[in-house]
Image (spheres, rainbow over the protein chains, first blue to last red):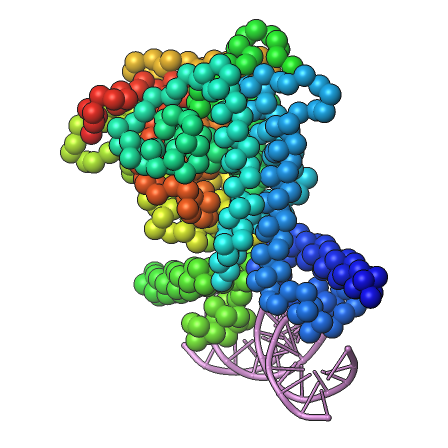
Length: 243
Length: 243
DNA sequence: GTCTATAACGAGATAGAC
DNA sequence: GTCTATCTCGTTATAGAC
């Protein structure tokens, strides 16, 4: 009996994965707004009503894709923050850069999933609570890198804005109680700005403007690291000292 | 004869505007991917084929909406950069902030048009050349503010990255030949990061994370101004000296 | 020349009866 | 699960009003 259940569950997992794969293919071809359970079913040789055994509605399928995407980019960021297995730990500015580059690499490799989570909202769809956790993973990684730097060497705490005293304290308490509020504020801003760089590249705003996109990205991310208080990893003009 | 032509042209302009208005309404309701010529025609009491007198295809209608949106946000930025008619010119950091806030205000007032131009690309649509000019207006305004500051008081030229020497020179030559390449590089990064802040707010990434969004935005934009070399307009901790 | 309306095409979605 | 009748869509050809 347990083997039967095991087989059934294995089949269920496989079919669920196949549905999501096909849905991702449609995401790329037609966009999230036109994601249709019927088309997915047709492509899979199933009948549309059968899909409802796996996803109770189109929105639930969308939610699953969104969570998968957040988890994938979050995992890429976490892996980059850990560094290579046997290798010595990178200095903190280099880890910051590695995380950002990992996010960008994932985005370039999965542009439609990136657009799903960081692009325009899907009309008529509102994300449920389940997406909140996965959505915060990249941010948590960035916080972790800065926290490590703070505990190890301290930070050049960025200037505090008087207007943001209350909100800064609230955000710090929510996100990273052990960091100075000014650092928490700078981190949230850097987080949004990091994705601004990626979105502009991915969504075509850099067309006819920026050619050396990776170099610009690395440079800007390095400066973003400084904006949250990290030390300058590769001093300007030192001729590629870092790594 | 000229009055007849005048009347025709007036009617043509009015109908064209009505089509775009209705299309914008559908943009808000269903998203750009589902913009339908037939639905626009139906809502206007016209027959779908009649629309082809005004827009040769659905994509051309989309292009017109995109250009209108770029022009609207560009005009808002230009107006903010000019300042109020009789008033004395603002100091450069305040102008920088005013431009950014004008862009954000426009985005908050027109979220769907913002998503059309700065959100996910519309599947199956590629923007023609005509959009390039309007798309650059906000960037031109930012360049102009920094150029004025440079010519008046000079700038704290940001650190130059060795990797970006060639690309920085190219971008400076393309965008602002009179500015130091390091400033041009910082400007392009700041431009993307500015829209990262707005997109995160508009697309819901700040939900449950940031509450005082305008304050955070103003603070981050002020720091972005410093990243391109503008002086600190309102020194941190000085208790609202600027205005 | 300028416009609108009718009709049609091929493709695809959708609802409901079976 | 299947089949069918009825929708939608973008687009074109054509005819006629002004």
